[in-house]
Image (cartoon, rainbow, N blue to C red; front, side, top):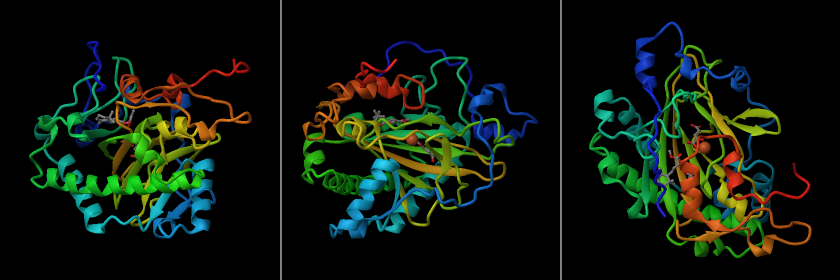
Length: 360
Ligand SMILES: COC(=O)C(/C=C/C1=C(C)CCCC1(C)C)=C/O[C@H]1C=C(C)C(=O)O1
Ligand SMILES: O=C(O)CCC(=O)C(=O)O
Ligand SMILES: [Fe+2]
């Protein structure tokens, strides 16, 4: 089932943040100012002992036991890791960053030829806005469904920059291979057969979202991207080379910044893997914050099963000690649920949770 919302939605006027930045107003418009409790603490970006794990894919591919253990720990304790030696040619990584940047730098009029209609998730604009009083993110997004072809909206694939389409095709092919490889070793780390996810997923759904966060005069008042977990099975996130540090993940009660590492990609577990693993590997809440002087670009790939498949916790990961925590459902239904609700931390996954008798 394709995730298409059905009700007409009134979202009011949504300012384009790059245009706002150009106009340099003395204050940030009210709709971007977060309630006190949601505002980010602006602290210096010092590297801390709380850095997310680093996984070397070239070692994983030799089925190095220590590296598989590291992967297991990363998935169990963090839900996020950075992958080095990921096998994607650095030119491909550089090219996608360049076309994404070039797209965002086009005049607004050109970008608005590919509008994200209210309540939908593809095109240029702000996704996940469903009401006139909802707070807005300090971010411009450009999102496209890539695979399978039936989720593509060719009218939204831009003709400028001229090499955008071809570059995205090449990049997506490489990221798809990477996702398959990572899922293989994630399965191994769970003691499962390497091809279990590939077999289960059918023709996997793949979408890309490019996020551009211009500098903001009051980074203490706004969020670049609201807290959320990803609905995917796996997400691959590329942080722009000269971008400010902006991605933060929630570890316990602390927002931990993800320090960019040259040539690494950030990987995170999405809600779908959380369900499949019966909560052994959990999706983790994350958000993006902005910077006073520096901009930020991220290129994010969501990789998920075919909409047709029914899924729930895998039998191998359910036993007396680990009772079944999620119900079975159709992945297309979850996609629809995900894209028709605002970003709200991990609440979207309540869709699948079985409420335990002791919880209130
Ligand atoms: C702005 O988009 C998202 O944040 C997003 C949506 C991705 C999608 C498209 C852009 C095209 C159609 C498919 C899909 C819904 C995947 C997040 O994607 C997550 C949410 C789910 C569910 C998922 O599989 O990835
Ligand atoms: O820009 C970032 O670093 C975060 C992006 C993100 O979490 C997303 O697009 O889902
Ligand atoms: Fe995300």
